[in-house]
Image 1 (cartoon, rainbow, N blue to C red):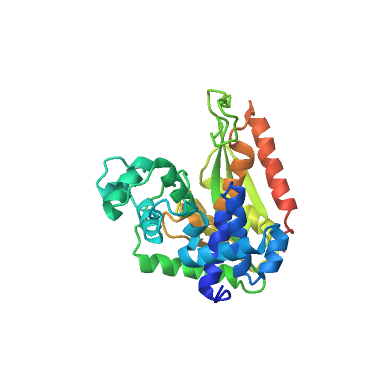
Image 2 (cartoon, helix red, strand yellow; image 1 turned 120 degrees about the vertical axis):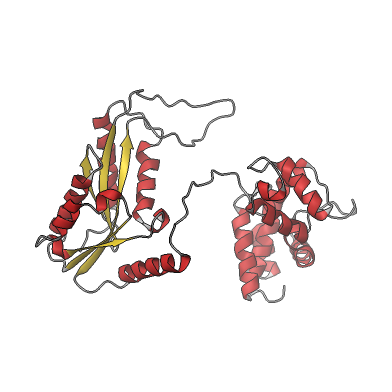
Length: 343
């Protein structure tokens, strides 16, 4: 195989390796592995010995991949007519799946395989079956998942990017004696968040809910260097909870010249009480850096909160809030135990 060390071949190897995770057919997995090993520069003899196949299989697989690309690893029909899942077809399918059905004239906002078959037939004049569409979707690495609700940032794109770059630069190159933390609040509900879980066919697990909901809140700050999580609990998500967290930061970092707090534009972060607190001798060591509006993905503590939900609150079986909060505190202790203490 020519040019196995080229950037193009490296990208092909990464794509095949990603696709390999979703393949169940043993023969197909073997053919994928053959091509991946060849792209890595392994000899046909080494591959044949490692995968326990004949060298002729290695050469044949390599030849088919060189001629037809990834499709050649699937298509074994011989002379059963022209191949339908061509690279052009898959390219069109990727574009369609990445887009919106409404853009293609459909009234339904989500794709079905039948709709994809019809849309691709309009674009390519190729008609395929449901099973072939399923195979095509596996080939392009498509999956069914839940879209993420978002709100568009109202700032001009250039202004937004400039703000984000300045924050990233600050966190990446902190001066000696200064620290930075990512700050955010999280709601803890006694009524459990419902999430996906493994179930047997014909089974639907049940999550018992207390009925009347209770809430607790955490104001948290995650050290940008050590990933240590500092959290303050409260019955209300208000300015007082946020100010208590700021005070806790000054106690946790007594030697820090400055404590940079990266946070969102939630109203409790900009009240008069916050401004008065920042004007005190302790508060003058704190610097607040506000992210652009509606940019939660750029606040790294959000990932920790999502992990907390996955490990504690989602589908939980706690019947009382004290029990649930004990589990929350246990999670925070485990999280910090896995990481070095703040400097």
